[in-house]
Amino acid sequence: MKDKLNKLADYLKGVGAEFHKITWPDYRELKDSTVVVIAFIVILSATTLVYDQLIKVVIQAVHIGT
Image (cartoon, rainbow, N blue to C red; front, top):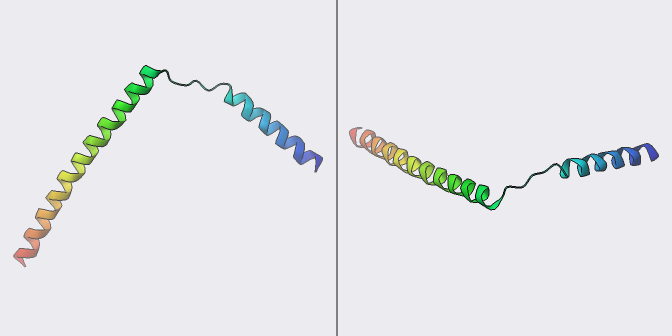
């Protein structure tokens, strides 16, 4: 049991050491990253909409042709 507690303590010390290595973005980096993510979501949504409509037209054409 004591060995498990020592392993847990070592693990938690390692977690604490890694936590102190974290660097958080400043406001400008956060804002720029947010703009990139929103732009990517808009582009991906528009692309998905276009392909969805294209597939819909093709399926309707195949369905009407049969």
